[in-house]
Image (cartoon, rainbow, N blue to C red; front, side):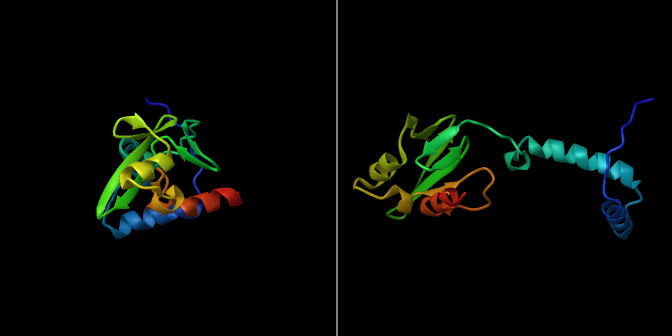
Length: 141
């Protein structure tokens, strides 16, 4: 026989699950549904990193704004999108390490304000955010 452990779950949460299963015509024991849910979560967490709460010290420090490893950075110029990504502790663009200011200037071929031209999407972000807005949030914390 396989050993088992008990995992504390709020009673209301467990009853909600039992009611949900019944309403959907699923005759499974809610305890088995919890086990299935754990299996499902683990298989999805392999390809959806936002499901994991990983604390990493790797990332790129842009003045007061920390961009964790895996952060995407983009800029639109003349109707085209250009992308860079934080890999380890470097911001990488076209295979080379670059600063945000140099990225904006390289893409445009002119002098630009990277805070107002670059958009950021960290692993935990659901949408792209203007770098200047991220900087404002970082400075408030």
